[in-house]
Image 1 (tube, rainbow, N blue to C red):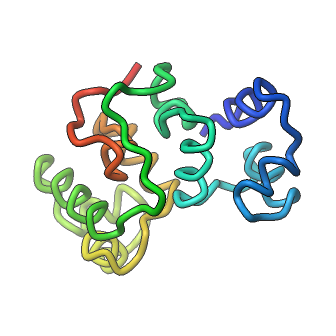
Image 2: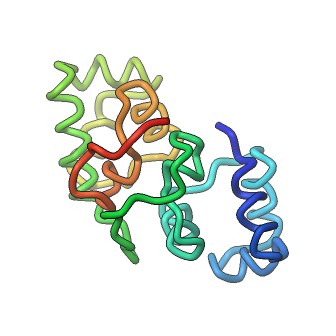
Length: 153
């Protein structure tokens, strides 16, 4: 994934890594690892960051060059149940079994099942792979857009 936009957004606002880390309630070192692309930012922190900068998740993860969508909602906390329903919609629309999607993501069918039933929040890396492959908006997947129509470069 391309993380340059994390740095660009921070620089545009003339903020330090510590400033952004404080907004997210994490250490500067943790934020630095995300900005350098060494670690992947968890979806809950990505959501908070996008709300703070008023940009789309798709933009930050370089899934789109559009900074924001007109109908995007700022959601304080992501809803695992809603994300699970949307993940199931993607799987159903593409005629994918739990096993097939699990193989594509290099995980287990039980992990996919846990995501779809809202037991666990999907990992950012898996969400990114799904959005990229199936041309889905991450903002839509995370419930920030009602329709998936606004997407991709």
